[in-house]
Length: 45
Figure 1 (cartoon, one colour):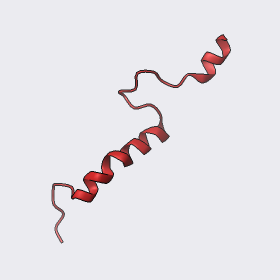
Figure 2: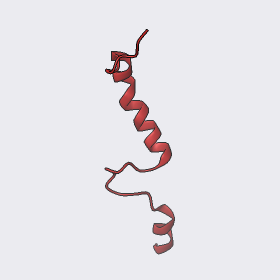
Figure 3: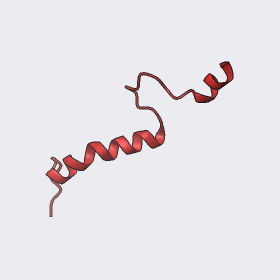
């Protein structure tokens, strides 16, 4: 079977969610408005 340039319906359905999970594990995505700064915030208050 030849690999088609376009992803299959299954890949399209899984794609977004899989990417989101990876982004959450790695950290905030580029579009995230506020990065996680729990430790720094805790020091202030």
